Image (cartoon, rainbow, N blue to C red; front, side, top):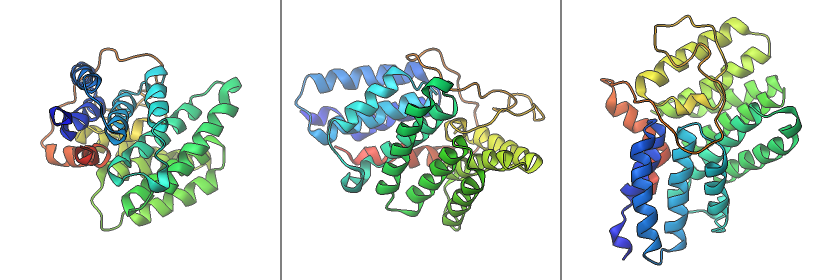
Length: 274
């Protein structure tokens, strides 16, 4: 019966990736995949598993074949963004951020196709955005897409709209994503010092909270002017395009509650899938 799998199993897979714990995530996804094979899961259950897989690979910055397979398998369930269950909405965030990252790191010969895929993903996120937080994620993704297209003033306007939506909300993950996308837009518009300050601040907080996946998709390379061990200073070498490999443990933080809160913005909705 499907009761052998809970929504928390799905959440655990996604969070393992966002916490850069591939071994833990692989153990969990292997167990869940086997359980799904032994049953007749509903379409929503299958889609929830693909959300977990996409989040896992996105968190590890591995945007190759496994990420693509999860994206394609989710779309095969025919759940359009404008009519998709809200508890699966994190898929549209992960897809959009992943596609924009792929575009930013694309070789010249691949840019046209990557641009088409990124544009579609950002538009799908817009269609799925039914809450202020989801709308803010849309504007962060749109800002990143516009940066990749060299449209820096438009990217700045998009990030400004994203920031305005977050007033009065406590969303550290999306706050960092908006700030980092704005940093890229500022750099492109010629405001290098302001861009660097914003990127440094966003990187430090993302590292402290253990949520570097929220900034890594859009993070620029920066000179290392921070304390030792920070996530910037040339750390962003673009996504890898292979399966799960060895990862890095997340540094212990006294702000564990905030870290979990940020992670669950992407993953916790899946707990209501089953």
